[in-house]
Image 1: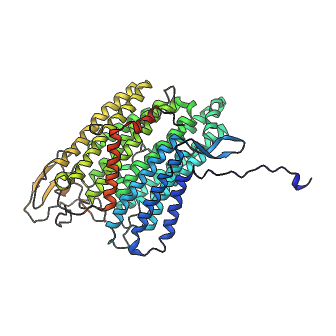
Image 2: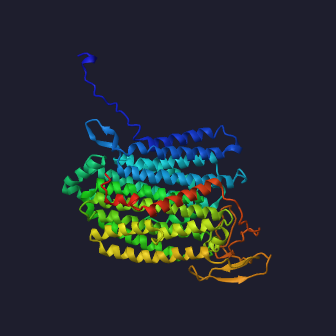
Image 3: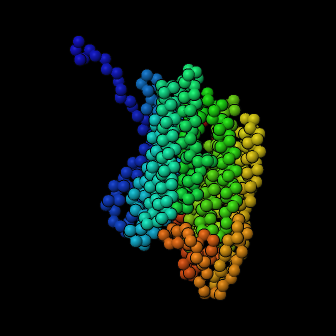
Amino acid sequence: MTLAALEVPDVVQSVDWIAIAPPAITAVVGLLVLVADLFVPEGRKHLLGWASVAGLTLATLSLLPLLDADRATFCRLSDDDVCSYTADQFTLAVQLLVLGGALLTALLSVTASRDHADTPRARAVPGGEYWFLLLSSAAGAALLPASRDLATLVVALEVASLPAFALVGLKRGDRMSSEAALKFFLSSVTATAVTLMGVSFVYATTGSLYLTEIADGLTRVDGQFDTLARTGVVLTLIGFAFKTAAVPFHFWVPDTYVGAPLPIAAYLSVIGKAVGFSGLILVTVVAFPSYADVWGPALAVLAALTMTIGNAAALRQSVTRAYSAVRLLAWSSVGQAGYLLVPIAAAAYAKDGERAVGSTVSYALMYAAVNLGAFAVAALVARTRPLNRLSDYRGLYAERPLAALVLAFFLLCLAGLPPGIIGLFAKVTVFSSAVDAGLGWLAVIMAVNVVIALYYYLQWTALLFRAPETAEGTETVKAAGPAGSAGAGKVAAGTAPAVPAAPAVPAAPDGSSVSPDVATVPGTPETGAAPRPGLPVPLALAAAIALAAVLAVVLSGAPQLVLRFSDTVLF
């Protein structure tokens, strides 16, 4: 027999480059920025940030050719319907959220890098590495919703997560940043190990890694392997529950958000959750529908615990505690994660689970726009008040009227109150998904938590329009308990505020120590220097705030732009 007579199967697959363009462009731009960092002089490093912004913009625009029809690539040769990468409506919605959120994060980061241009090199955030890590994480996050096999899903999850660990701890010489990165890393690695064990159990019982084939295989599991399959399903879900910051896997959130650079905290609050929720939707609704009796009740309980504990912790934030504004946003994001879990839990009980999870996608799109906008205004305030306490926002309307109005609108959207109509409609959609699935008890718990959240959102909003406590001099404010119960004691104008000694105090972003319970009045920087209410707003920061505000206003004026996902079969 000659070699020519042998029939060699064609193992070379054609790649649909248009389908994979969004994550591919993001990854390529990240590599180019890393290489360019070797040749760009120190004084022009900010150009790397604008190059990253341009790359993320191009990656977002590359979604437009995919709107016509679903596309798939990296398919199995023996079956064109079994593919590793699929660009359907679910993929495009999540990729829009991820790339748009990464773009806003990049705009915030451009401002942050310019503000720290005079920081000593030994303590400065390295520019090239920062942009490479951010783009790499965004590429992994954009790949994950398109993944249709467990191997690609886990790889995308780690590509999105590993750079995030480094981004959290990238502030050199900052103890809080290092501690936050270490806690984030150790807990995430543990969750990943548990997930991989679960994936191995699922593969052992089904013999496949493709999600559609797993769904088919789990319906025919032998009785002796049923326990192994159920264990695999539970362990696989744990890793994604960690990424969504669901209770009890939420403990890393507050310290990580406070220790990370503020743009990265914003990134984790939105893109990090998008990664977790998209992965959770894929493994539950697409891969494990036959085990809905396992993951449905578990996710319903997680949703109730997550929204309750998140909102209760946000309610307890002291207005004068250092970084209390960031901590409130962190705990608020935990509470919002509980709302996002409700439609996924409802999918286990609904007749059409794939349609039910559309409410999660709709809510996530709303949440991404307004939460990133809130972090953008927090970044603006932090330029003159680096401790970023809630009390620092008192009288913001008198100092920066537009910023106060925009932040108030974002907070009202998160609360679900007019004129933030999109927040109200999104909550009603999630509430309806629970009622339609027969989860009345979960709908009641959600309604109670929405009322709890109204208090702290409205309290923060009211602070924006209250008159500043003093027009001159300084004033010492000592926390006396929960938000709103602080007492104040005045000192003479021009004198430094008295700070009592304490055995342990948190570190400021620059590495200095501050007291969490004793702080100066808003309007007076903690260093004792004169207030800088006239500090100009950088272009990139103004663009980020404006873009988030425009999105929130448009969505409130035309909520059907995102709410249509709640009535659409996404897969």
